[in-house]
Image 1 (cartoon, rainbow, N blue to C red):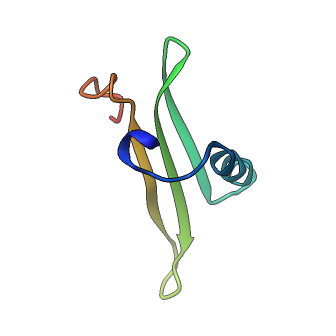
Image 2 (cartoon, rainbow, N blue to C red):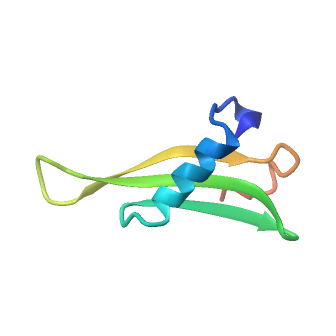
Length: 74
């Protein structure tokens, strides 16, 4: 997260992950290469007020600087 200038201490990130894993509308996915995390994305759904359905939002997407341009984000 630090590589792209996102704030957030490791403790805060862990606290948020603990919340997200119990949520039905939030998710965090990681990309791994040889057992090492090389990317992360956090996604959230919000119920729409004006019609049926949800809106999706990506709140972070980071690929390790040494793994960029290798289709990790794809």
